[in-house]
Amino acid sequence: MKQIIVLLLISILSIGVAAGQSSHDTRIEQAQKLETEKKFKEAFKLYEKIHKGDPENNAITFKLGSMAHTAKNYRKAIKYYEMLAPRGNPNVLYNLACSYALHGKEEKALEALKTSVDNGFQQLGLMKTDPDLASIRDSKEFEAIARSVKSIENEPEAKKFDFWVGDWNVFGPSGEIVGESSIQKILKGNVILENWSGTSGVVGKSFNHYHMDTGRWIQYWVDQNSGRIYFEGNFDPDQNAMVYFEQVDKDSKEPLRRLTFFDVSPDSVRQLSQLSSDYGKNWTVEYDFMYVRKP
Image 1 (spheres, rainbow, N blue to C red):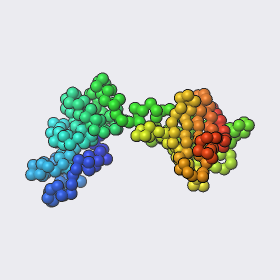
Image 2 (cartoon, rainbow, N blue to C red):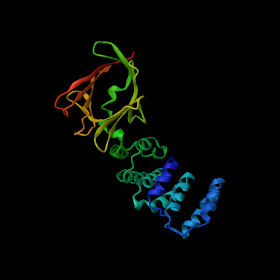
Image 3 (cartoon, rainbow, N blue to C red):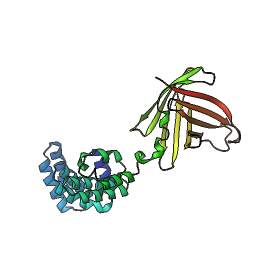
Image 4 (cartoon, one colour):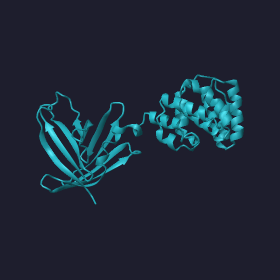
């Protein structure tokens, strides 16, 4: 288990450690000072004494589990994580799974990992690379748990716009070059970033991603003049295209915009922008571009 400080803080905050849970104990500052001085054994012993007198202090319980795991004392790490496990915090359960796996208790590790995912653990990338889970990663049970994670990596829809990724020369309907664009996947592949540079002088970017909770694709466009457009849409298999609609009020006098990206071939994408002043009854072409992949 990678004892990442972010996980530690999230876990402590989300298991309900209230400010008034227990009376202030000056020994906590002493233990923290020992940690700062890297006197971890002494700090651990002091934390254990504090915990013995205040076993309901969840922050100290988690601290002991984390320190024991870092010290490779997995038996004690399991002891303290198990105290917190009934609260259902997914990060605690994930850490418990790691400690079980390293302590040779593979079945319990898989059970804790499944419960962690069932309770909302979503860090699929960590699960797939964490060396602490190496002993269970090749099992069918682990594969099934990984597939059940609510993660963008497990969403086929999230890959439907990958055909736009690449470096492109962009041409107008008469074959004139109108710009170039570099389309990249960022944020661990979860966001498609457009970098547009037009021959007319317009420079802009758009951020595109699949939103799992709504089942919709979102694009947010901005340019150097603070122009902005917000789109939502979906991939249309009948057209083999990503179809976005500008999100405006139905009663607005602004024309509605439809933006369609056609997957023409591995090396060409058509981008068609259309406007409607009657909320989608009739459409006029705003521009019609062809992206040609650079050699």
